[in-house]
Image 1 (cartoon, rainbow, N blue to C red):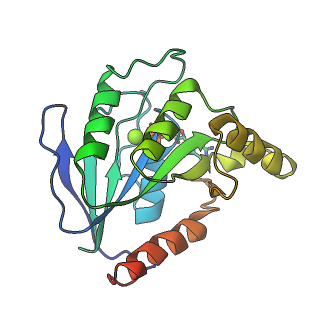
Image 2: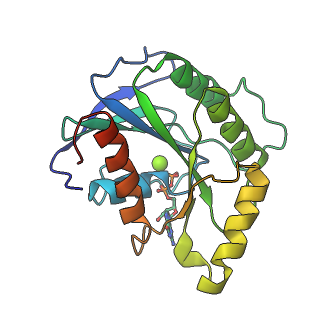
Length: 201
Ligand SMILES: Nc1nc2c(ncn2[C@@H]2O[C@H](COP(=O)(O)OP(=O)(O)O)[C@@H](O)[C@H]2O)c(=O)[nH]1
Ligand SMILES: [Mg+2]
């Protein structure tokens, strides 16, 4: 996968119209601070195009990164971590639901969860929404470098159980520090692009 050109093309606010893209979209979802911007930067090979925020929950926009005029990475707004009873009325919920409802070019969704923790109620809700809209999310277990190698399988199992994923669901452990897991994600993206006849990145 060769990423030559990346460009933050569209930023959608709460009232903006969801754009109808010319190219296939790959969306990234997850709670604030899970490492979404870090993953997107890592995939784009840019240090800080997608902002890495010290203040969780600040980004309430949907950001479209044009990749090589071949596809988009869509950075969805992050949700809170601790809310026990999720109210779909929350801003992020509205935006994410509207996106899932309106987009026509979405090919796959990556759902990020922290490899250290059991998925939260919000993670589960997000997972269920994605399934409801007809997608089987690709789970990225972030911050792989924060746990011991011997603990990885146990934590992946915990995430699968917490989200009640299908048996053959894909969970890719990833670290933005070491970039472990990146090749696996590139391979998936290339597979989708080739399926559509777009050609690998
Ligand atoms: N150790 C470690 N820290 C990470 C990793 N990914 C993100 N972080 C840190 O977690 C914080 C939140 O990351 P960010 O990408 O802004 O999360 P976002 O809110 O989901 O976009 C930042 O301080 C990052 O440096 C990772 O894989 N390993
Ligand atoms: Mg972010």
